[in-house]
Image (tube, rainbow, N blue to C red; front, side):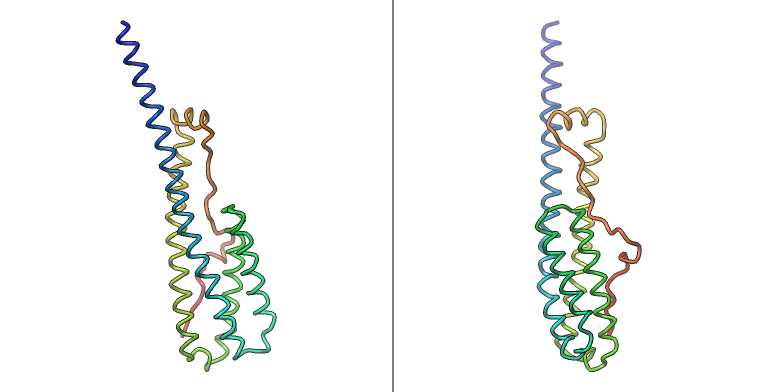
Length: 185
């Protein structure tokens, strides 16, 4: 009988250890995925001033568009420093909207659309947007996995004991913002 009790205790301890380690693994995967998003957002922030300057040369009278893009970029960079996926998502959605406006302005300038540096910047931005979307999907998959485990019985007992909580998804809020940045040549 004593061996049976010791066996049950050992099984419970091993289950607790395995569940705890599973939470740590999921949490670190989500952090890694967030780091991937962070890298792509920084790349995007670096491309935007170059794009704005290129368009400015052709569309000097579109001052409000450039100010809005610059302001949205600044707000997105500030939101990124908070580390809060919800705030970052809102700021990034605003930035995407202003970029759409910038590309709409560029449609009115055929010489700009034909400029090599503008075309290259558009390609790089499109590539970056694709990478942000892939990184966002990877992050959200990891968040989904940890959230499922936090809510599932009996793992939720361990989650509560060791203060593992649900994480926020990196989501697009507005339906219009779900449209990709339009890049046309």
